[in-house]
Length: 374
Ligand SMILES: *Cc1c(COP(=O)(O)O)cnc(C)c1O
Image 1 (cartoon, rainbow, N blue to C red):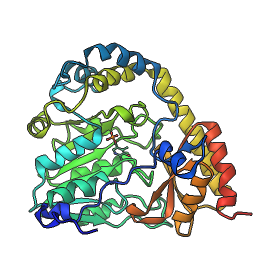
Image 2 (image 1 turned 180 degrees about the vertical axis):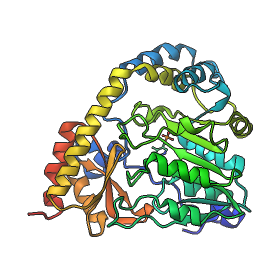
Image 3 (image 1 turned 60 degrees about the horizontal axis):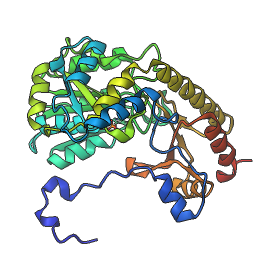
């Protein structure tokens, strides 16, 4: 539709498409007149919030007439102890989405180039385009490769030039679930000119990621140009509170702090995050449910000849080998919300978040009919 203010918008904003979130359960039930539906669409923790976080929120709610600590001192203390970094290395954000945006606002200009993968996380193209910088998009690895639709580090390296200012890598990536092995990623970062800021987005870090996976926060002393983003939205179960952070060289954090809005993380989010860091049983259960759900869905796909990208996240990208929208619609009618990913250039795929065992059973019971499998 024509927008009468289009010509007034900043050039990058004119071509921007808003982020398409997963359909909320309430909207589905309203539109289809059904009940008892389940949402496997937004990579949320199916266990619900931890008791520790709920208790902390109740306690902190007595303080909501006050502005939050704009510096987030107590949460930063807890994170500094956890990661063995100084407080000055930490930047808190309204979700890790915000720290990704802050990094881009701090370092990118319309004259610069930024590199990310073809099916890379949606926040990267939005950040780069909003600033009007030039995106260099790396074609994904082939569907018949060992890491179907994954990030091609050689392709990233080929696109680095004098104008490159930022590189964005999600490990594992959303929506593909694909990952990069520690040594390959580390060697790539080492190969970058030190004037290139590299964001390694580890939103799924708290899941079981395998022995070949690397903790990028351990590389910060080696790479002053590295920014490691983490989230409380996934394994920590706090997506609705909006809290995330990044670790970087203190000088990088100090620049990002100039751009950050004063009270970007709330009283409740800060308190819940501190408590979530202590909730080790909840995290353990989260991992266990994810491992078993991911294994059973992957096995199901293998048994039924449904191709998928191997995943180390809390979701699986399946290839339905036809327009995925009618499949998505049929699942909606069965009360199951999954995520179409046409916006990621994957019109024949669906991203399915790992739910509780009975939710996975319900999905796997519905899929054969929906996909006309015998
Ligand atoms: C979910 C996700 C995020 C984060 O989200 P926030 O809720 O903003 O913390 C960041 N990166 C990737 C790759 C994700 O999948």
